[in-house]
Image (cartoon, rainbow, N blue to C red; front, side):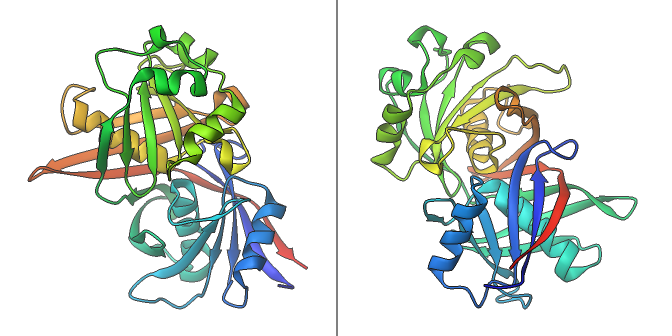
Amino acid sequence: MKNLGFLILDVFAEKKFAGNQLAVFLGGSGLKRGDMQAIAKEMNYSETTFIMSARKSRGGYDVRIFTPETEVPFAGHPTLGTAFAIQQEIERKPVDEVWLNLGVGQIPVSFTYSSGEPSVLWMTQKAPSFGPEIPAAEICRAAGINPGDIDQRYPVMEVSTGLPFIIVPLSNLGALKSASPESGLLKKTLGSSSTGGVLLFCPETRHPKNDLSVRVFADYYGVTEDPATGSGNGCLAAYLSRTGYMGGPDISARVEQGYEIGRPSLLRLKTETSGGGITVRVGGKVYLSARGRLV
C-alpha cells in the first residue's frame, strides 16, 4: 500500500474546486479489498476509485469503486473522473474513447478536446429499467418535502441505469431549496433496497442557460447530499425521456446541482430513442486539483 500514487479530481465542475470531488488511485492490483475499503474511508468522499492495472483487459481497464462504507458496481462521477485519469496518466495522449470494466459491466466514456486538453467527457450508461410508480406519501417524509411540492402531472418512480434512484418531480425551485431529509428515516427508507438515493428536480434554475435544478440525497454514503451525481442524473435523463417531460423522448439538457452545499456543478444529459430503447449519455468537465502519494 506504500507509495501509491493518486489524483484528486473535480468532476462535473465548471472550474476547479467545484463539482464532485474524487480520489483516483493508480495501480491498485496489489491491494486487497480491505485495503481499498480502508483507503476509501480515509479519503471520506462519496466514492474513491482504484485503477487495478495499466494494462487493458477485454479492451477496457479494470476499475473498482468504493464508498466509505461499501464497494459499488457503478457510480457516475467516478466513471467519468477515472476515465479522465486513464487518459492523462496511462494513455498520455488524446483518445476518442476509454472503456471501464466495472461491476455493472463495461461502460464507455468518450472525449471532446479543446486546445489538446479534455473538454467535455461523455459516458454511455446501461440501458434504463423502470420500476413501478411510488406513492408520494412514501417518500415525502424521508425526503423532507410536502405532498403539495410534487408536480402531480408526473409520477414518482424508481429508475435504474446501473444504480437505481427514486426520481421525484417538484413544482418549483423554492420547494427544491427547502427540502430537508430526515437522516435516519431516509437511511431506513433506502436501506431496504439497492436504491442509490432520492433525486429531486424542478424546471426552475438559478442560471438561464440551464434547464433543470437537481438535489440528490443518499444517506448511506456517509454524506446526506451529493454535489453532482452522474448515475442519478442518468436515471433522470431516462425518466425525462420516458415521461415526455421536456416535450419529447429525445432530450439535450443542462442540469445544475450542488448549490445548497457549496459545490456548484453542471451536468449534461442526452437521450436517443430507437426501436423502443433509450440510450442515455451523461457528460461533464473534469479538472485535476491535486496529486499525491499514499506513504
